[in-house]
Image (cartoon, rainbow, N blue to C red):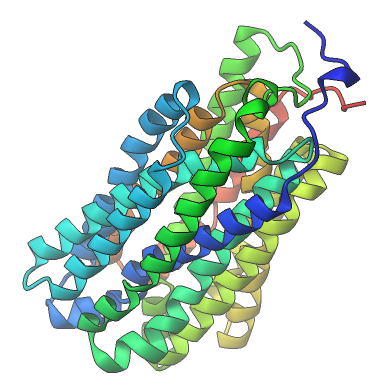
Length: 396
């Protein structure tokens, strides 16, 4: 079946996109505090790098396993009121982390955070897709930039609020979730009133008639690209502060600021990927993002402090521009399954990051943080697989 102009999905609803992006900021701000406070937890609980990696793995695998299942359910039974439930799980996880007396308590808090993320992301991404009108790349970028900004603010909040007061002060930050719960409840109410008529039209984004073989190959390539991107990002988000402290002897607070700068650059890159993909095509954005970062990752382990900071900003900006394009490309491969596809790829992002953090933590214990960055510098070579992605026709 070929869709015509009569199948127009309607105008973009920026008020819903802005509100859902703000809640994404709050959610990911609190989620980002877990890796940001690793220096506190490492000293306070006498953790090894392997235990830190396992903590990340517990959090991210919890999210990755649940997200596709929740996304598949909400495709069939849209449930916008799951959004405040997910935020409530995140708030509970923050309180558990603040009050945890042992490493087992930290693992339980990580599970609660992962559950909150797994509930929030698929349904929030589905609502953003339905509210997008025809600008799916732009809508996905608006949604994701909220999360990216929240993730970038995590290290700053850790450096200037959590570090001076100890991890118990996470309980104060958890109260931010109350604002998120209130806004998400309003979004859920408005979604039930104004978006149901669009549900059947949400798949009217142009969808090429790929064969089943092409779809399977394309999904395999996209998963490999997600592995490359988030395995590398795990080396930054989990171990960048340790690398700067051990290799350049900077203060922990300064290292947190440098991590914020990297994450802020990533947020900017994540925002531009979607609308550029709307204009020039998703595949070109994916090419430029994954493979284009290779010269910088290869050089980074051999640079001084100033060059390391500069290269990390370029890496974060370029590498993060791919995710919106990858998610929307996958939406177009499997129209009508937005929640499941979003859950799958957000879940893969968390899962790959968690596995990467655990493996890289073991590798750092056996060798050194410096060796980890030398090995990870070759990961963007996987971007060569982009050549196997089929090119979809441009929309009219």
